[in-house]
Image 1 (cartoon, one colour):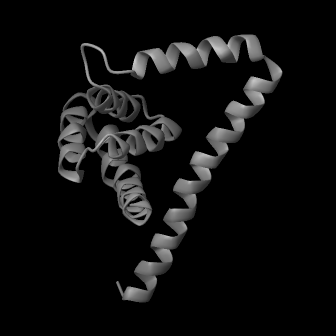
Image 2 (cartoon, one colour; image 1 turned 90 degrees about the vertical axis):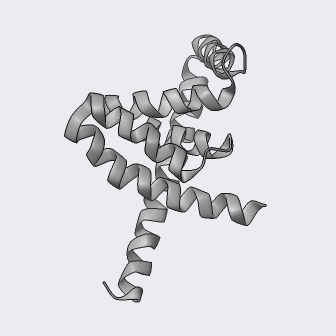
Length: 132
């Protein structure tokens, strides 16, 4: 594939990943507006679940990514790929996570691993490097 086509494809993928993160953020905002009493409790619950305890936050993000891929939840796949990267996971660690997930989830999990997660890792790794 010529380099120009690869760059165009990457820009389209970039916009999809960023768009999905933005859509999720907007959706959570609407949820918080409509039913704030439930949203506050849900947010408090999930924040507590992802704080370091007996398991470190990095381990929890790893599990969340595996479960997201297994469940075929694209928004969570992107969100927890970002969470893994934010917690310091390497691309190789993420690929190992996905290998185990594919062992349980078969071809459906593998297809998410080699497409959506790979795209998210590429884009979000670049974003993280730019911020540093």
